[in-house]
Length: 269
Image: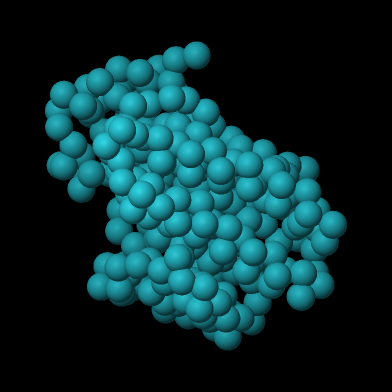
């Protein structure tokens, strides 16, 4: 694949696959479309994995599955719509991984929901909805993955959660999202200690500013300039640059890492 750039700094060079996840089976949530989940699905396939992708948007999920299947082969890809706020749907997703690929090795909890509202104006519904998708959804999928790994009795399972630098840093209008992402970081640390008892690693990525063409179109030029001005490279990250770090955490290259949150950011210190 050719170098891809976003026009706001030096174009990053796309990294080819090296078989880092060969013959591993991964469940990836919120994997439809052009964001981090979609980029992770592609990178995992390029690294040799089999994948089960999910998303709350059934049409986009089907389109994503068909596009990836045409490029990488239908036998390596399965999909199932999943709302991570629904325990039955989460259970069905993990059951599908067992049915189609005979087991599970990696789980990427990418599903999340944002929004902007100052705390004084925020409703209980706004707060609860963001927390239920972003934090509780990660909890449900992490629990399902840990149960699956523990029942299988084989060490080597990996969970990678998608957090955010906003879990560390303050930003107006983002109290619900920041609280949820900080919760994901804490969940990652605590679950990692428990999962270590049966040989499973749990880590997280914390992106700062990752954009894709569809998101750029609905972001004002003023806001985009303001956000990229905070980045050391003067540009936003491509989704696949975050996905590369997910690949690292899912692979044997991070075999002694657990309970960690890795910042995928070029923000000034």
